[in-house]
Amino acid sequence: MLHSVKISREACQGCVNCIKICPTEAIRIVDGEINIISELCIDCGECLRSCSRQALGIQGDDWNKIKEAPKVTLLPDPVFYSQFSHYMDPSALESVVSSFGYEMMTEEMEEAFDLSAYACAQAISHSPRQSLPLISCYCSSTLRFIQSRFPELLPRVVPVCSPLELAADLLRMRTNSSAPITLLSPCPAKITMIKDPQGRERSPIDNAVELRRVARSIMASNASPQPETDARERSNRWLHWARRGGEARHIQAFSDRKLTMLAVSGLRNTIDVLQELELGRLRNVDFIECRICDTGCVGGTGTAESRFLANLRINSINVDWNVTENDVQRAERLYAMDFWAIEKEYTARPHLPLSDNIGEAMAKLQQMKEIYSCLPHIDCGSCGRPSCQAMAEEIVRGHGSVTDCIFKLREGIATLANRIVVMSESQPQTLKIRGETK
Image 1: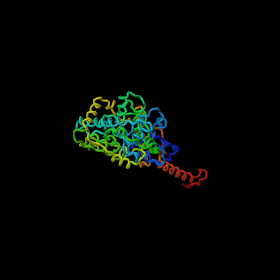
Image 2: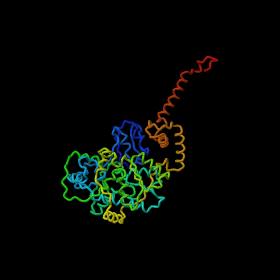
Image 3: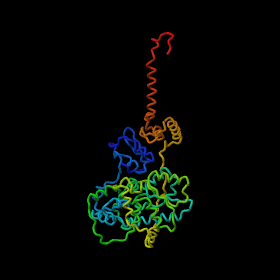
Image 4: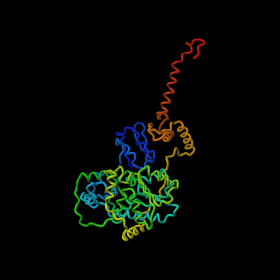
């Protein structure tokens, strides 16, 4: 298991904010050093938001090295178009990017997102009522969170590859080129998507860089767009996947019936909706769009702009939600090629076993319960673990002791102090007066 959150141990002050906010309890601070358990991390970015010391960041590929290549092919996440106050028109931004000698995959992106929306609409249409609602897999963090915390919901995740990867597939098929493709990612989750792909053996995307780095370099250049010479018609539907509800709206455009959709954003709301679904309370819903980041992908931790301003700019972009006959026929042709479907089923993320031996694992589990029962159960994080339960598990694994808990240490010191007092009042047997008792 991989993750794309990098650590600057020198900057960490041990404030434990990241420990307490992590939804999968993936972070530990032991002996003054912060560590992330790769098997638990879902790259949601919540730890980055909580860290005021910039001890946590995003680990992408080296943009300085990538941009020096003879040919630079960029796969822009829809969020990219919301980061600039002076390039409000998508074609103007593409003109500026082209002036740097970079190639933007805009046509492939538009087709890939249409294909993904069409495939999702078909999946909903052909699913029995008891299998609905289906869940979006576009947010990589949501998918990994389901694999970790709600594995019983995995059959509901739509078996459609990310439209970002489908765009790269389209370019590969049409040009037969092996030139590197670089994703401009708004979050660590989409970087991990290409490093450790789910649902397919290998990602067609070669590199991923933090969107913020590229956006800021373009802002600093203050370049002017070139006049359009061959303007083409654009629907801009795919750009709205950057905000909450954009994906659901796109799927509805390709559906032959009115769908009941639910779109939520933010970690807390995502957890609440998945819990409601797990309890069987969303039976009348057809599709659920979840985004871990607040307001959608525009709220990603790798962006350069405020999520509110970015959301406002996406809303201001002209969009044609009316799907034409040509749009449907194009989506049908691509759908018939069957490359949009995942290659392997999504599987649950395995929990770290206490031991490879079942008998030994059961004994450690019992030991863990006994240790946990002695802990204060207040989950303060002072021990460097996110909860008392995690602390008990660490002790059983040999990665800590009970005295790591400040409350147990204080109890031990108090007991020792009492013993010292008793010992200080004691006298040697040879000095005691007969008949005197203590």
